[in-house]
Length: 416
Image 1 (cartoon, rainbow, N blue to C red):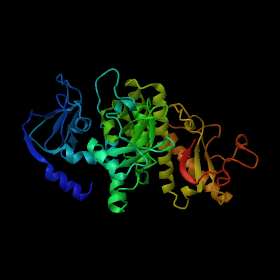
Image 2: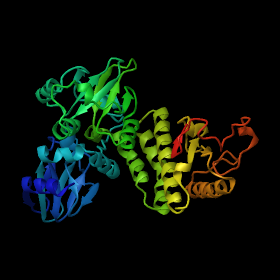
Image 3: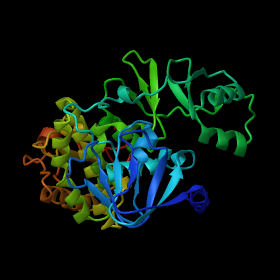
């Protein structure tokens, strides 16, 4: 947060003190309207509505926060917070603190912390993205004046509006876009909303898992996701805060942790935790096909991060000189824990054979990094480090050459 935002939060905070054993918050009884920051002492948290004299699920110390899941979802989803000793907390009201959680950084925080509701039920609710939709979306026509759309957003109390274009597709108008285009750049309020709408908003389909949707939101650094039905009709809009109610997204925090791994050792440690995530998703009765899709997305992120970390050790090599291709079950987004990492690479035509050999050595380093953490490469040679094998020959057009002729942009990311 910026210094100005922190000052605003501090000014709005209410300081309270609690004796040992005092209930600070019971968000199972009623939703919280505040976020609590521990200033001094220790706070015990129970994520289930009944303590039953069991040990606390978590103990928080100074600087840690609680109460935001119930505040963001406006539901009685916990936790129960009790002072473990003499405790001082700062209570920050929801109107002041909510925008921080709705930001991209807020979404990353929620994912990193695994801060979703862990309800003690046999079947996890809110496992599908359509179950996260709270209100009907505000839909406007692309020709509507900006001023009229802003008025409708204000009357609805909506932070965004879906803009329908003539081809049946949708864009999005947000508060941030309005501030930048109208207030900063001076676009007149009489201009049609099509001149402001963002046409690149990621879209998911009803029936997609909440875990898949959260990964898409994090990968695209988006503020919102559009939710359509199979026929392409818009059914809802979800934001980062909506995912806090979904228990099925709890394990997906590993995705964001992988993406932020700072070292090879840290990445490998997080790779080894992925099977536990899959077990968690299955135990919450997320359909196996959805779990496979989530796992495939996590593997994509693992390989992307491995490429970044290895090439950071080789400043003489450029990730703009090749395109990494994900093959087989990984390329089809059907990977399972037993799947090999099948891959290939397309090089820029400007690279000479001697340079390509240095790149292949780096790709071998990537494969060893992954193998040491349990993700093995294909043992038949279908890997980016291997030289061209006959099975991949396509006349003059071979895997490993001709990236420009084949229409592939030099890039370090993977494509199926």
